[in-house]
Length: 379
Image 1: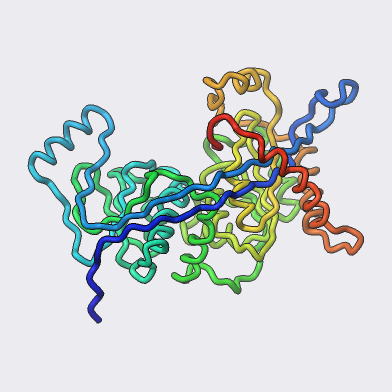
Image 2: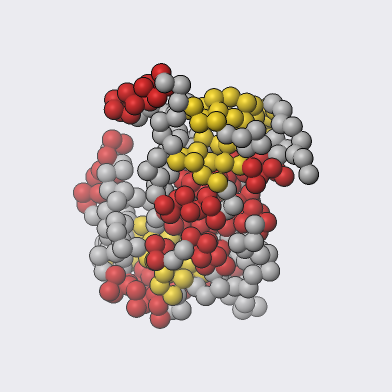
């Protein structure tokens, strides 16, 4: 069957305002709230909102030049362009150029590249042409990221030196994090290609651990507690990409150390209503996983590492706010036990306990906080 000829299209998509609810965070032992007795610091992460936006998607036949980074790269690209080095795609191919963004982090790939391209196809009325979609990524893109594109059913071209000629989909602004809506298109596509199913049973709870940066300095103390509660330890790098998606998407409960692999929670079923516990150091708390949980129907809880005086001083200084984003940290065992009790409450079937009613009451208090203007963007 001959495919219909492609033609130029321009569409605008209105992204409505999204209010992200606050969430409970349990930190380490301090005297901040009781000078006489050390106790775990229990806090409420503030609600916030993504303001409504208008995105412009365009589709036309053009030449997309590589992004220039560094003197050596710029020289190579100029030489390539001078020699008319252009990579021409076939007439039926549709491409999305990711070379303006990092591809080392799978969370970025999911929300800034795959989710944007799938949303663009939907907005442009080209959903049935997804098999023709080609992602152009920088040379040197890690194999695990390339495999993620391939598992989702797409072809990949890794090329940093040549211009790409063909039918291109673009978005303005060029970079916009689709945390508030990306999970919908990602899960739908994963179901369409057979990675997931809407009838998948609940999987075992998992402890999404880490070996490199942002790991626990007292892992030997925390892991047995988490395992005893029924969580199976998983290291994302030890299993294939497709299985990473399936395990995290199907699990009823996730206890995770903050990192890129948490991006796979974007594939979770909104009907599952699980609990995601995200642990992080006192120097690097962000709202993106909580924002995703608000769309996937999961209850988000946070576990914060012990307070470190130097970190607290740096967080007050905007120039040093991200100085500790890669730091390892200690997690208080009592804090973990409190988080597990909170999880049990969220999953309670006790007729005398109505967790949703309690949560709704808390969300009502979040609304005034979400309306407060925030300086800068949400990380």
